Length: 266
Image (cartoon, rainbow, N blue to C red):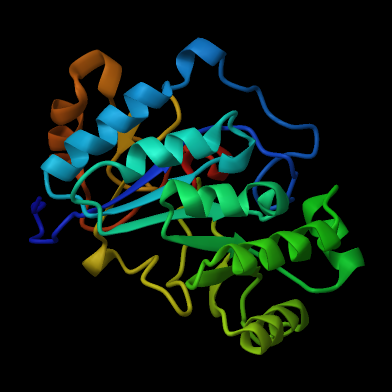
């Protein structure tokens, strides 16, 4: 699909849950958040139908996000359902990696193509401070399991304050380089103030070539991370929600008071 600014929109990010097993300080309050009710979250059949229609409309790249997608019960079954949709050329998942030791092999066998794994430091104490509860060894074991499962394309997502020269960022970069992983540096953003920057090593933040839409776990199709507009697939139908989102996609992100990183998938 082509938007008003002649951008080809072919990348769909789908949040499958607003829940997470970490409390990273730049993403979620320490005390947690008010979670969606079970009945408000899209079922596996609904998510699969959303993606199927998206592919029919020309979307080729699908990424599952959260919250943390691996905390969604039976997530590998959903991956299997989605991988059976003809026309998907790129099928990925973004994860904090804590549960990969348990799920990596099953995700690969279910048809997932690749992984983006969050790693902001290789220092265990710093990692615990950033995540408020995470153990770095669990993440490293998860990454090892992903490699063993056969994932050939693994990207490391590293959040930075302002520069990739920061100590934690350099530690993450060395880990990625030592293991043959690509790394992306993502500067901290503020949705309400509308502050964001280009992702170093990726295409995120480059509004002129933005090719993505987002679907929240409760079925809102959002044209932009920095926009409050959203179109509910349950209320107006999946195809119509996509069409309205495409037609509403701004030339450039402005701000959002409704989106949160933990429920829109970044």
